[in-house]
Length: 129
Image 1: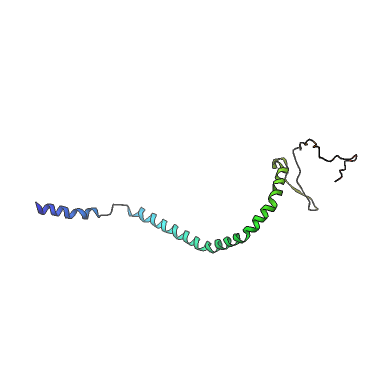
Image 2 (image 1 turned 90 degrees about the vertical axis):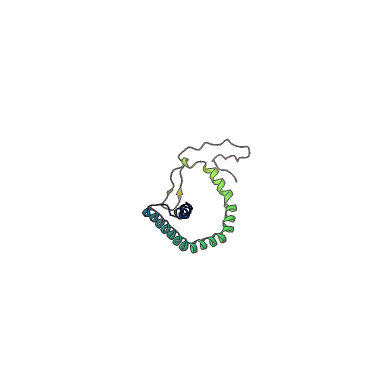
């Protein structure tokens, strides 16, 4: 009896070490696809790395200039956007033969009331500046 019990206990670890039964086709297929995708991505990263490094250096150089440009142009751009109001009120730009560009307003502009500090036009519509 002891011999049978010893043989049963000796055989137990060998059964637990067996790999689970997985279809070999799907396991190999997914791992091959995964490896292929990794290789493609590594290749792309190695090819793009020098270009990205150069772009980072260029952005570091141009950063202060862009910041200065924003402080100079920002207020004027806000004034322009306030004057335009809504882009749907305008037709598409038209270029004249002499190179001038016209942007016509298709919605009538509501006149604002005259303020006390506004200049008064003369008899012919002229305004002294």
